[in-house]
Image: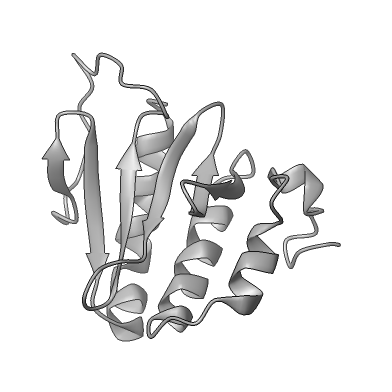
Length: 138
């Protein structure tokens, strides 16, 4: 099945448990519109970005996984940014975050939180730039 970006589900990294599109089709979540908007932003940030269900939620990757949707927030939705599925040294990596979107959770991962769809739209340029910066280090 082709996505809006023209890529097929299998080329996007569909897992054996189903595609991200399958997951989202049945997802009941109060922030579903925000989740869909964030997915579009992440995938549009760079042609090398693929997606799959990992850790029971949509996760995004280039050569390694670098972003995972955080769907358990009490309000809104978050995107956890990390440097791969396995812990690795991040010494010397500096992520430019001029809009202060990142909330660092540890030295190798951070979260960007969006309150609502208006917040996603307001932060979309800064978030896209942050994704592009992040994947340079993955």
